[in-house]
Length: 112
Length: 457
Image (cartoon, rainbow over all chains, first blue to last red):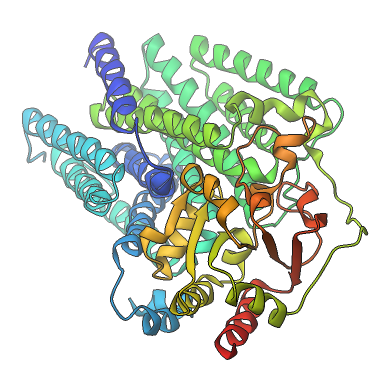
């Protein structure tokens, strides 16, 4: 794609980005930041492209490091955001019993 | 062996980009947030399948293996992390994303021929490194691996100026020569800029820095999209860059600060250093039973939760105490400061985890006029967000930040670990006021004792 078309896409995306999050209550700032954080993990696609074209071992190693880091960003970002949002929606009737069961967050995370 | 035609590839990337836009849109509203996030994940999956089908990918076992390893690291960590440690985890994920983009750009240097592509490579390497190093320092601050106070030294502005100039020179050298050495120099200088940028930021401002670095990484990914001629990376990165910028501004506004003031405030002088000394002025402390009596005979109680509540994992005990008080016919609401905790909205996440009904959580503007009708304001592990210095002391680092108007309540009870000043390191005058009572101890222990005493009333 030529430079001008890419520039066009860039400018339009800036406006879309401004527009979609213009009014967000502070309640959702954390999940939104975390979700946006996960989205830029899509740089994994770029890392795969580079790794897929690598011919020298050194290039491949650096590219694989990029793949690893991007995977952590992408996968971890979406999982952690989902966990956060699960807590907003997961409000069940027996609140107290639940609260005690949740007292060990580590065990809870593993159990899920 | 590309199974997809370029048209199909472009179409699927477009589909993924639309998923990302809808994901961000969904995340902006409580009802659709979870669906939004899942949609984003789905879009990412489609994009990943597309890239494997659209081109000849060598080293396939290596790549798939590395992705498996990355997922095997990321999933358990994300599942097990405690909600209190969420901010540092987000910072870390953000940092590795920036690093990945910088490495991609570094490797693309050999394929770049046009000047604008070299320019995008220089941008990606520089900003990606800044984002990575900055995120690491942020992580260290939040994890308290290093001091949470602003770190400054004489000559910091000069050092920063020189490093930035050096980085720009290296970038220019890179664009003109396409030299690999220039790229490495640029990367090293970017790392130094990242460290110097975040070191002088005080603990209370760290959330805004995470958000800003998040926007930086977004722009880095967009630039790497330019380098690779990949529209999806361009769109996704730009979306995050733009929305991250807005989000950063919103957060800064909630704290009554300007983004520039936060990032460069410490350069102007040591004013954000705060106090490190404990005061030995007299305060009134009380036992858990005294606090229980205060609460048990009140009509309206407003709880102000802060990071201390989160650290002590006391949100469940707090929720139980609130229901015990409500069972006695006492009206309990929670006053949520926009930046309570260590990330905006952090407190909402924690209290939602403890099943506190959303209706009890009140935002600052809604609850502030009600403090004057409250019998007791119970401040649990919060400090800076109720510190009147934000209104009265122009020299204070938190001056101008909107605060919860706790002082208007008839009685103020602070549950505190010690007299140590808060995250921002500023002494709180409210602790010495006559209507204030302090209960020292770990928030969870104190709340458990108070809860027992309230039940015994």
